[in-house]
Length: 270
Ligand SMILES: O=C(O)CCC(=O)C(=O)O
Image (cartoon, rainbow, N blue to C red; front, side):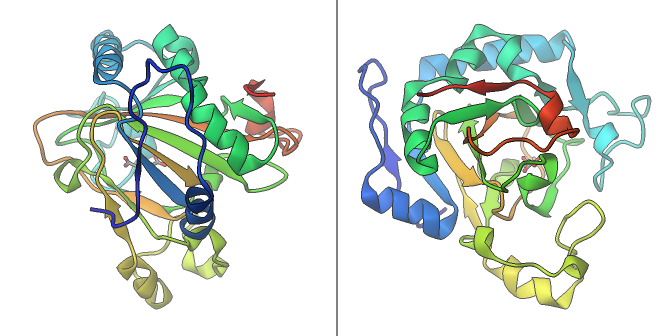
């Protein structure tokens, strides 16, 4: 369990969105992540889970399958046993109003506006998904920085990750290396997919600093796109389900000709 201080958002029916205090802003800058307990009401989380389960059942596209990623332990092809195990329900923003509304939730946006210090944009190029970690065929994710998914002028995006249920060690909770968003990492410490090489001697001390961050239904974690993080496998019987969106300051534009530039980018605050 993370030892970092956390905030409880409390009653979402209140129209006011609680801004970050100075200590939280300093904590995000130092550690690269910030946890908020109970930001979203249980009944909304349950509604999201019901939508996600139905869409999984119906295999509603666009989907990303474990077999397509090819991480260790993943089915080798879509036609192998477990080959249709879903990793991401992609395009969450357009899947259902409940995800769309969450991406624009004032409780999230007021905080992002403070952290970026400028108007906030939502990128639909990656994340923008319901993440599922299935028992058995759901794979562990090695230590990486999410910036590998995007191409922006500055590597300064923030992922907002919402837990729809328990995320604990036994079902593959997230682990973070606090402060690692500020580290310069020599290219030879990374593999071709930009994961920290498990066998590289210089990476061992870094792995030892990893902290598991347990989340429960309605908890939210913000983390910087340069923060190294990882997650384990799901040894429970239940699918672990989370919602992930990514944001950037609107002056930080996607690089022309990239996938980031080809996707919609939506200004979500003044
Ligand atoms: O395995 C997980 O749940 C972590 C997912 C993740 O960090 C990613 O796909 O970038």
